[in-house]
Picture 1 (cartoon, helix red, strand yellow):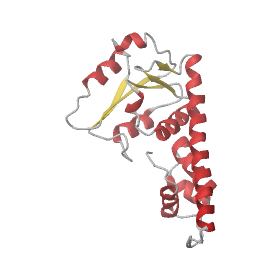
Picture 2: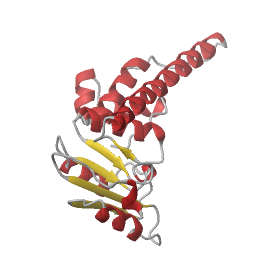
Picture 3: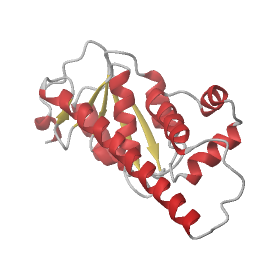
Length: 203
């Protein structure tokens, strides 16, 4: 039945499938059947791994395997992650790397002209989320200062640097260590900055 959503996925490269279930007692069979029906060349999976987990070995391996012109195929969008911010950043990263994305249940297929709009929408949403975080942080700091709250030692990184660093890590696949070096701070300082701003790290 799932194959009816995607009669064809036209890619110059390979179809790389990804399946995930959150608990060990859930079954991967339905997802695997759908990915096989979509003629995936290789399928990676995470069994008993939450979508919010910082590290998902199966997804990490799938992302390393993908090359320009390939397509990442999933049964449903929520298999990639439960955080919309994470999903948005990941799709932006795929688009930046020239990798297509197909979600069978939602009928998303970026190998088609209409499907390419998906990347633009998720990119816009990712930036909107960061704008909200920036505004809330600035307003929160101003309000705390007006109340006379002691904000402690000045932070090594301001909110714009933290957001930009997070964008590089999540959308460009650059390591935290490399981004920290560019910003001339330690790995721990940058990680604390992400935590302070409420930014999750999934990859």
